[in-house]
Length: 209
Image (cartoon, rainbow, N blue to C red; front, top):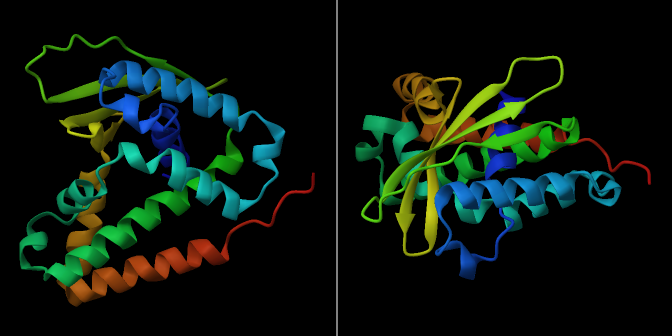
């Protein structure tokens, strides 16, 4: 899962200025930004700055293209309606942090995977599309990653990712449902927070330059 999340964010990482992103077609946005992030990762100075810097990089360059509020709402599913406003805010923050820390940690294992973005026929009236991509890995089968995206005033935003036919938010929903059933919404928030603390403690040290 960690490697797949790395590929998910790698393909959708931000490489276009936010002011321009609103005018860019979703498949072109993915294509251009993927190329920029791959170039960035290949620079030795990025690989050697340490985990904290990688997290900052993700915060600055990846997050603007994801609608974490909607992703969290979909992942929590029917239990979202019973959460208080404060609980919803905590759920979004912890889920966002989980994905960011998982991704930034996985970037340490980047191995020159190549990204292919399939052309998209976009009608002018469409506000929700799926951008299809393939992650090419040496010595392994390509991984199909599809991005469910919605048009917003700030540009196209990802609200779900389908990896080899499996939805990311649906995958988390089954886990979240069980945690809510066992210990309620607060229990789910606590579980996510504990996972995030563990990921922070497990961060590898800064690499020697």
